Image (cartoon, rainbow, N blue to C red):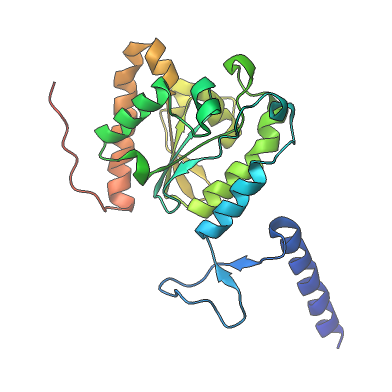
Length: 242
């Protein structure tokens, strides 16, 4: 009887914690191949519905002072079941106006980088560390990143990519919780909650420093090689000869 009481108390505590995290709807992982909703009414995760709910929540966020200066919240874009996810640091001027990440000149360059390794923009999921533009495109402050990181973690959880490409030092420092140099971070494959992570230069930095483009090309070629090993859903990469 004592054991039953303890089990009931633990179960009640667990569901209470889940309610605090996810609200009135509770989600569980559902075995591969199962597409129907269990009779209990529990839903498989992730789903586009949960991502939409998160987006609606983020668009009304006033957790930090960036909410006072933004034009639009820049949530994220792309395939919500993508095997590759790209993460930058923060929206810029063009993104703040459009409400979509990487749509300016840096975004156009990112599209070319992805295309060079056989990905269309719509095949990947793209997001930032913070969802609102910092004034004058400054780096996000620690307290701003801290408020936004839980949203990004949920996005990663919902998309569940096999590989993450981090764009730039600021994004890498925040997601990987490190202060290592960008050059050293580029030299290894990292892990984020069981997912493989590559770090390379931010496209905006490449626009200012053309000599870094070759380094970026080497970085993303390594990413594509691992992608082929882990996923293998693309034809062989054809490298254009210059």
